[in-house]
Image (cartoon, rainbow, N blue to C red):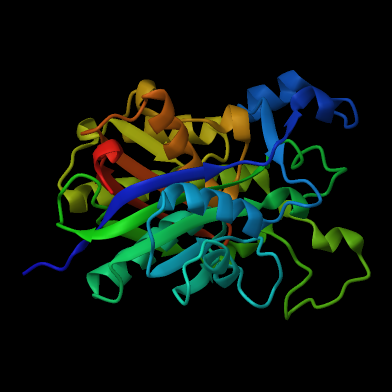
Length: 329
């Protein structure tokens, strides 16, 4: 008898109320709306206010995904927890009224949601849990140097969540197979140096901000997402032409388009909401799924490919056939 699969049964999203558009950034930094749009595809992004934290956003998305239901486990994908210790997931579980549910954080940065999905699928396949809430939430604007015109326009804050239940492999909404990888020798392409055990304190204020080698990240992201996508499609027995929607990590519209081109996918298969929310790190894929469901871009029966790439370097992919969430509980 095959192990149970992790099946999508709930979907939620949550964004801060503050909208930061390109014109506001251009008014104080040496850039323009056109420069930002043509290089990233971003028009605006959401920014968490002083009273909004990663946990706050995660709770909002998680509550929407639960829809009044419950979960045995909470897996929170984030690189921006509310504090280094303890993990943020137990606080999220408590605020959602999930009692003593197991709860922990996963940090694979922008690949975090796919890693968390795979972790949740393992809990379900192993019989450890019947229902798992997976949340991707980040407040990456707190890590960005406010004077850096190359990174300020890219990042936004937000949270997205999915509720998974134990089900049959191959049924609508079942995730898998998964393909996950890392390449730690390139960790310095995208990093925040201060605040960890290696660099506890710093006399250089800039060390606490994110630093990125954009050109190299672009090259690695396109190659690795395309490679991982081919692997997971082969494991699923799908051809590239079978894929109806490609939902990649929303880092840059050109990365999404270049990856789709490498795979031989038509442009209209690419799901993108980066123009409205920016790069929300671990939240980007579930936020894109929620938007695509809301506007009808995703329809029941669609074959969906998910792929992400992030700092670490980390990357991974998975697939599912989109379910009718209106008829699932």
